[in-house]
Image (cartoon, rainbow, N blue to C red; front, side):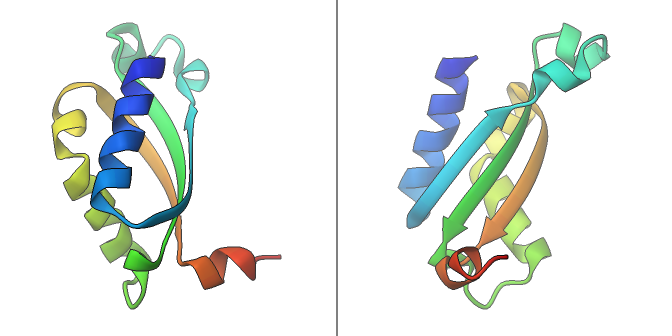
Length: 93
């Protein structure tokens, strides 16, 4: 699992100008579900990138999903996203 998460992080870092990224395995929340039993991943990611400037949250998520298309087809079952520009991230709270 850790290698798959690292591979996902590497693909995102090659495709976006990332200031901060954190990917969390949430498979433990899905024990007993068919996808979890089949070894498919459930992840949560926080991504900070100014590549998200002028994009609404739907467009940001679509951008990430497009980048991770091959993982979504094979190993990644669910992906929860938090996407921010640098300014948005550092002005939170």
